Image (cartoon, rainbow, N blue to C red; front, side, top):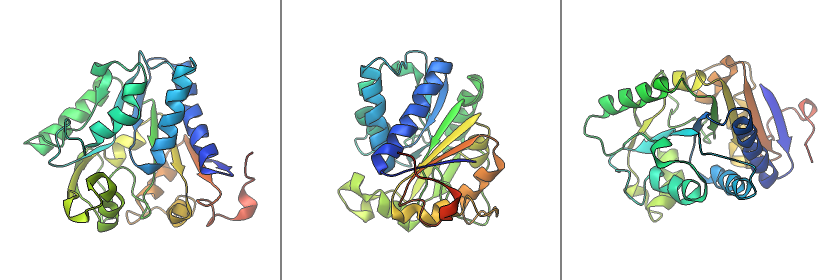
Length: 251
């Protein structure tokens, strides 16, 4: 894995956005996998800025979001679909029919996950997957467990994950869905390139699990060690648990 450490959260977010913009320059019709969550906000702000300046053209791009809460249809204001529309899609030139989501409101969750996988395969797979990481080292909504699912599936959310998403539900943990649909780790590892960004001291232990040389389903992000093209972008706080001799913070 290629490690890049930046002094601030903002610098790390700008580096992740630059990686996406560079991918679009290389291949305008790229297929992108995109996350949600707090860490993604600064990335999407920067991508919107780059687009406005002519540095990021999404007109030929397709996007697949990693996950969605079970029970929330795409038009629900608390859904990740709404999150993406507000923070990125309404600010760039991405065609509406190029936006792909797991539908949390689907009646048949297994069929919905199979449909999602078919749509990814039909477009030739993901060119670039942008990932965040949970404090418990989850990626997407693949939570620590005895086993991990390779393909998109319904999953039970850890209490810490639900707590981290409570802001979308008025700060009320009891209103956060207990289940979600998520892209599986096998589908993630099939991406041609992966960029993972982590910022903040609370992510430091999870980040460390990616560099320990041990792969365990109890730290899902550790499976990224199996991929041949992963760029890890951190701020100094998220890099706290890594040997200081292993990197130099970039300006």
